[in-house]
Length: 388
Image 1 (tube, rainbow, N blue to C red):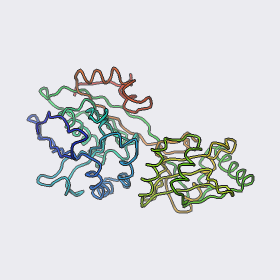
Image 2: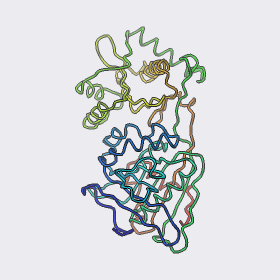
Image 3: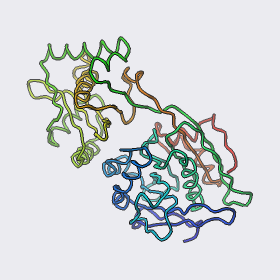
């Protein structure tokens, strides 16, 4: 398959693509593994690579994330950079490559859009490589995708340094442009040895609310916290339906199914004496960290601040377990966010100059959903684009 061949459509079987070195300078071999099953089969290798690069836990629960409804609407790709010659991607170990990048191709109907983006804004589950070569691995992966016909690629990676442009030479084709930006990502809450010590690092109003609303709900309704809640699908769907921010029934059922597969999953709840679940929270635990993926709160009790009550119980329970970090997958509007450790991340955006690329940027406001991260990046007026 030539360097400029189009990436296979989503309804084709998973394929492996290989990039050859350009004539201008040697570059690491790049292999693309396509499809959920093929990528999940490499979970063990990716977990080991994470441990070696100081990113432990970043690729845990890969099957869970690739099975989420929002992710299933895209095609996942794993880009392997610097794979040792003669080693088949499916047989690769952490010793056999420089780094790996997980990203997704957008689809319109069943057709691949040739637009790729990492699916996580903090860079945790995107690029796995030693810190000193992360930007180089990212750029190599971007160039390989562009040479295969990609219109645009967005990669977010951990680290505080701006991406360093890699000289490509005058004759490199196709023509493409790069922009980078550094921003502060949603981080994590460091947990002290006790509940009181942890709260002492928060603002006065946050400390008060975490204690006050919990005592009030216990006194008024006699609620109980269940750190290991057991709930069937029917009840889960009902909790979602009556929550403040319900998601579609089909999406909720898929969420329940994927959550049930987790071996390191967390499902906790607050229940009233009459058996009603007033709040549920779900996530995962790994390597001293607890990551929260979602929370449901009953819509009929707005004055009790169920979100705050659940966080109070959860904090106390996780601290007692010895958890060191509490992470909220999509950040949190709760005031405790002001006590978070907020890492710096780098976004690398590369686009191939073409009519399709112009249309993508020109009409991004209606091609992508309003809150889409790639859309906001394409429309960022502060980006400085340079020939790459």
